[in-house]
Amino acid sequence: MTLKQYFWPVIGAVTIAISAWLLYKELRGLSFGDLQDSLSRIPTDSWISAGLCSLAAYAALAGYDRIALMHLGRKVNWLFIAIASFTAYALSHNVGASVISGGMVRYRAYSSKGLSAREIGGLIAMCSFTFLLGAALLVGLVLVLEPDITERFVDLLPIGASTATGYVILALVGLYALASLLRLRPLRIGTFQITYPAPRVVLPQLLVGPLELIGAAGIIYFALPDVGNPGFVVVLGIFLVSFSAALISHAPGGLGVLELVFVMGLPEMDQADVIAALLVFRLFYLLIPLVIALPVIPIFERLQFRAGQAPGGGGEG
Image (cartoon, rainbow, N blue to C red; front, top):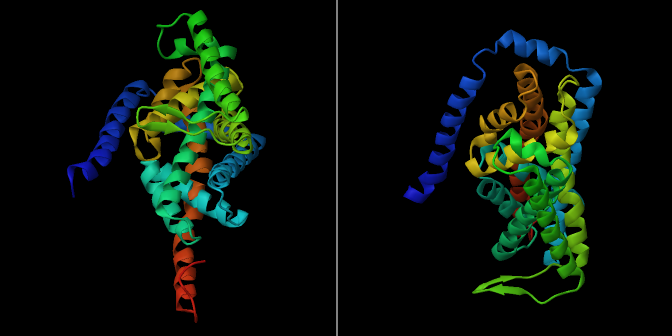
């Protein structure tokens, strides 16, 4: 293996080790019994709400792929898109290095539908951009609605600066949408070129991207108790920070990173309650989807093999 192949796994392992050490320092007084008590106090309706939020999040993730295919001008069956997207994200969320792990699943799936490697690369890039656009939109809204949220992590920016930053981010998102509506020519920066998608692509992006993140954050919000709960907007803001940090870290499942950021971001809440809510998140957003997705790959490969063995079969499904 080359140095490049070792790089991201090593980065992920180091991140987990550092996060685990910092988390241990934060949770030294937390016992397993405290955690059990917190889980047992989560009411049934909160479990149901958390499950529904997970379904909404994964439905939105399927929308990522649908939007990308729309941008590419390729038509693929909705059910196939939903299964391919669900499998790709269920694996990448748990394995880490989402562009690579999810990209492998997408390549195998969409190449069977006739998409070229270039088109699949464009699809992956468009999915990533839709996520970034949704995250930017929500970060802007959170900073405008709850500007003091930055004080939970770093006390460097005054509230006025946080609000101004929020408005600037929202303005940039608005300019992107306006450029699409006005059908402006591609923006060139040196050899790099940004082509604005058509409005029929941009408008769904502005809905689907935020919906996925709101659904994922909703799992944690509903699992948290009412006592000390700062409200959904603050929980959403902390989730955006923690989820982004987890993606950057390349740690499998954001292990340790999510927990550390949330414990630091919710000092007013009981630590056992916060960790219990994150366990619910991992159950609904990571573990259950992974268990469901794992059999999909061998089933798909079996169907592809049978299609290739059929008279006149070319291996495409």
